[in-house]
Image 1 (cartoon, rainbow over the protein chains, first blue to last red):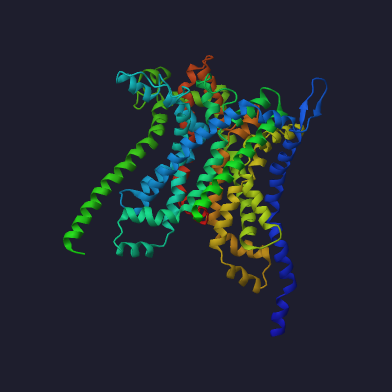
Image 2: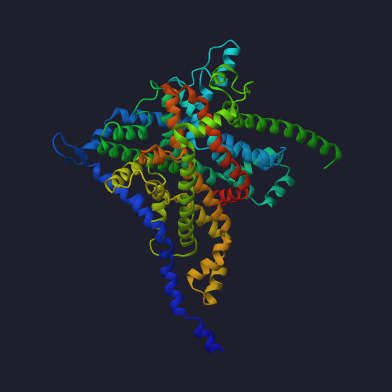
Length: 303
Length: 293
């Protein structure tokens, strides 16, 4: 009996399987990851070292494209726009998402499920369609905001003027992604054990103090992760300004954001080599900003 | 707690409840307003779109006419866009969710050489700007003659790093190591354990990743914009954006203004419906990812 049981448990085979199995599970993802991520990156890096020659084909120029990009005001203007955009959009979005998550978590309000779900709905709307809808809303003639202003005797506000354009784009992002962040914060708040709540109510802490002093600090790691993803997303801004360009040619130029710049360099300017250098430089900026943010936040947390 | 104190608390509680519900209601109006505008705009004639108030219906109810125009312009190309979107997104989502599940399972339930490096690579991938990937991909695929095919849109979408992280977090929580160990003791092979024990238990997480991958692919604009040239290959996002540029550039396209909004309405209704029906999955799954983070 014991002998049979031991035979039925071929220990060697199990150990071998446990060693190889994870790699086999990873094969499909890894294959595509290499083919559609690593290889294109290597290819992009490779072409970024070349330049179209005046006569016949391309020639190797080393870091020339990068040196040119580093000194290119068109690139840095775009980065400046992204920074302004991120500083405007992310704090407002995170603050409202947190506020609403805390309100919903506190259970004080009516129709909690209704609010939670309806705030999330815009996330299901593609960025292209959200931008189209808001472009209509911003329209001076057919947009209800301009119509209301004129009805009240004011001039219709110009949402795509140089002063307002970033706010108008930030508003689209707020509309689309606030609910997504709220749901994540809400889930994190709900995961905090309830006996903690009872303990602090016995202590006489008010609901507000409980929410801000005890619950909020506990979801800080979650907040940091969502902010990092928002930073990465903001710095890749493309779709919204690319479409709004249709109604604001003079405000959104061909290098409004670095991604738009790279797109135009490739498909309009026929300079894919230089575009590749611009993209890499943007990737570098994103990595540095994300890293610095984590560094600052972690240092503050350690204190 | 005295009775007086209790009633004072509940008076304050009631006041807070009114105040906070009012704040949420205001934000609800903001969230709902654009969606309501799509509905009113889709029911108007082009003339009324300019001459009547945007947030109310016009007397002349033009929804059916607009739908007819939408589905008949350029020989019914909008229907083609819808079919393309459904095809690209469903194939991408199923493939991406399966790959992410296998990879997430490997990261959650095994320790192996190179694990940390691979995780770092997958995480770092999130930071790469779209242009840095899609433009070289376009140049490579055009050398292979693969641009302007459905594969050019589907294959890159099978790589979905957020799905890997979500499945990793989900599987880590949902499937205990003891269970897998018990399977091993019974002599079951690793793949048998995965397919007969683990897969059923990770279904909710799988469903979440499926939805998120579907949304990601459905939302994607840059990839199909770069890869596809022929309008009858476009997904809705690229097609509608093109219709809009035609409408706004005024090259005989004024007629298209309400049609663009009708197209927006037709394409968001099914996805919003799907979200409402499947809320159990995304709510649970997003939570798992967030808490783990």
